[in-house]
Structure formats: structure tokens, C-alpha cells
Image 1 (cartoon, rainbow, N blue to C red):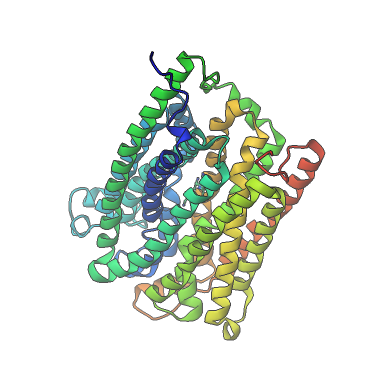
Image 2 (cartoon, protein in one colour):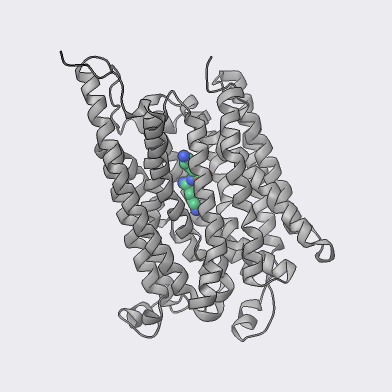
Length: 470
Ligand SMILES: NCCCC[C@H](NC(=O)[C@@H](N)CCCCN)C(=O)O
């Protein structure tokens, strides 16, 4: 007699958590690459003549194709058509290609007049050719990393639905934050040894390893699909894969509560990820530190978030309170940015800066841990994949524009400083205006969080309830 199979790899906790580790490892190196230049703004200004607005534009270019070419929306469609494992490989390839182009743009070979140098320096001469090439590469990398983000979210749901979903999402984000910590430590160290090219080169190599990790995941995913298909054929599995339909986009865009969450997401994240790009420069300026010291100090920010996010995910799974956590997270973010903006120079000590960074780390745990697992409560499961890609797309608009706005605000509120730095003078930027802008985003996020809690009370989405129903 042939024994019937009733379980799949999903039912093995070892297989489930191994799948998570494989997916999260690629996000670890991807998040490293995102911020590989973040601690090097000062070095880039002297070596490649990247002023703050140039630096901000390069940082913002990560989101350009996702936003203007609607790549993220297409990525959702592609993901739903070809499935998690193939989408993972596509996103991995895009990340490696984009990173290699960015590496070429900042390389000594290119900047010594290598292939394309004359062309890229022949137009819009106020913006260095190296930055133009870096922007092209980073925009392609950005398509890959955001597609990977949506794919990994869908992959986690695939393996953990009905099990430890919020904890798994929290752990995936924690591992990604560890990547940010690692890069804030590693990048200045490598740059001191071999210049910015070495930092970006190592980041690119790690992405190649990340692509291989997605390759290993491919086989896990294939096996799970084969087992699920066999169960379906045997009648033990009734659920069907939901297909992405263009008409589903309308239901999402017309859901008021979903749009409030998307608004909160874009405002909150615009005051976090773009801030990461300017934080090292701000700490250097406010505390009179070297790049390496400021970068080490700021590296505690993702570490706090790394420890707390999975714990809060566990809490939400078991106790709820997601809407209240969104409010508290926004409030803490305002406090932190106001400390950076308004504390007088003589009182702005190392301890104050560290406290503000830890407070921001707590905020960066509260909001992501509660926001992402709340989305399935607001939209039908049928449109969940599209909902994640739309929320990423709206968020990307903010992530793209904010570094440009902050770079411009920094330069405009410090007339003449860029020219003095270019001339080799030891002057520093004043970051008050940019930090007030970040605090303003926090205030708007807090107002939306209040509104969301009221909407939840009125419409009963259950945002305050635990995810696990006993
Ligand atoms: N499973 C949760 C996925 C979302 C995690 C979230 N990432 C994003 O929102 C990305 N769209 C943007 C990453 C930009 C990095 N500069 C997160 O909290 O990391």
C-alpha cells in the first residue's frame, strides 16, 4: 500500500526557519549595499566633489525607476505570475547588475577618464559624471531590492501563514537591520584602507553571495510547491493560489483605511531611511567627530531596532495593540528628531546623541513591527500581494524625494559652506533645518496614527487585537 503524504516542508519548523534564514540573508546583504555610501558623505565630497545635493540625489535615485516607471507595481504582477522563487532570482540579478554599474561610476578607472567618462561629464556639468553613473546603477539596484522586499514578504507568508507570521517578519527585518549595523561599521573601515571603491566593491561581492542564497532558496520553494500540489491533487489541500488582477488595484486605492496606513508608512519611513543617509554627517558636524566615530555611534540605531522588532512581533501576535504602537512609534520619532534639531551645541553631548539614537531605534521597532502585519487585516487576502507592492510604491515616492529635499535644505540653509569645503576649509554644515523637516514628517505621521486608531475603532478591523486567535 502506498502511504499518503499529509504534510509539507511548511510543517517542519527546521525547514520553515531555514527558508526564512535563506530569504533574510539576501536582505541582509541588500540592506548593507543600500547604505554602503551613507557613512562616506564627507569622503565623497572631497574625493569625487559630491556636494550634499549631489549626495542626496544619488541616495534618492534608488527609488527612481520604482516610482516613475511604476516598476514596483509591475514587480507585484511579475511576482504573482512567476512565483516567489523565480521572482527572487530576478530581483537578485537586478541588484547585482545595478550594484556593478554603481561601482563602475565611483571607480578610479572611470574617474581617471575611463569608458563613458567624457560623455557623462559633457552635459549637466553641475552634477558630476561619477554621480550620474552611480544614479543609473542605484536605480537598477533599487528595482531589485524593492522587488526582493515584496517577494520576501510574500515568501514569508507562504511559509508562515497560520504559524509564527509576525515573529518571522520581525526576525527578517532584524536580520536586515543587522546588515545596516554591519555596513556602518565596515564601510568607513574599508574606505580608509582602499577608498570608497573598496567599500562598494565588497558590497557588490556580498550581493553576489546573496544571489546564490536566493538560488539555494529556489530549491526549497520548488519542493514545497511540489508537495502542496501533490496534497491538492490528493484532496488534502483545498486553498488555491490567488491570481493578481489589474482590477484589484482599484479596491486597494479606494480603501480609505489602507491609504491612511500607506500615508503613515511613507511619512514614517521618510524620516528614517533618508535620515540614515545624513545621520553620520549630522553627528560629525554636531559633535565634531571623525566620519568613523560618527558612523560607529550611529550604528547602535539599527541594533536597538534589531533586538526589539522580533520581540514586538511576538507581542503583537499574542497581545495586539498594533494601532497604539504606531502612535507611540511616531511620537518617539518626533522627540528624537527635535533633540537633534534643537539641543544647543554646548548641551549636545555624546550621551544626549546616544539617547536620541536609542529612542529612534525603539520607534523604528514599534512602527515596522506593527505596520506590516496589520496590512492583512485591512485588505482581502486575495489582494495582499498587490497591497504590499502598492504600499511599497507609495513609500518609495517619499524615500526618493526626501533625500533630495534634505540635501537641498542643507545646502540652502548653509550658504557658502559647500564652496568652503571644496576649497579645503575645515567648516561644518548646520543641520537644524533638515532635522526640523524630519520632525515635521513625524508630526504628520502621528496625526495619521490617531486617525487610523479612530477608523479602526469605528470600522472594527481589529488592529488592536492579537494576531493569534486562541
Ligand atoms: N516584511 C517586511 C517588509 C518591509 C520591511 C521594510 N522595508 C521597506 O519598507 C522597503 N520598501 C524600503 C527599504 C528601503 C531601505 N532603504 C523595513 O522596515 O525595512
